[in-house]
Image (cartoon, rainbow, N blue to C red; front, side, top):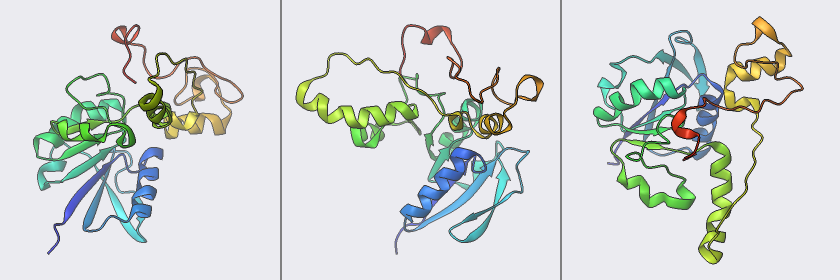
Length: 208
């Protein structure tokens, strides 16, 4: 009899979480069962997944006591900071989509098409790079294998969807001032030269 795997999706009600659910439906992995987690505010929401109704449960410190094989975290850095180590301590392998562990040298930073063997060198948490980095390195890897790239000048223009549901709402509302939920200035018909949080250790050395 084939082994059954349990997968937790953290941040299931957000933009990235909902996209993850769509991809999982497309992949239709065999022998998997799923449980959806979200913030206290979104707890109780019902999402259609594989044609069924799934309730999203509030993420708590004891949520991983029931034992999961894997967890996909797409709920932001603070959530990953607090709950990913808890999940890993329970024997769950976390795939973290936030920026929190990207600078941690003890956590493998993986793009499967580029460095999949590094997945095995995890201590319970696997990070993935920024979305624009993932796209770039997939194309650059075969070029580097053949020609050995020495230098890259790379500029990105990020979509508001990368800032999550609140960022998208700021765009759709065309708002500014106190009505903004995510951005410090109006984002509609605008471009802000700022992404994520500026930290002292990231000014000169980046691992995105």
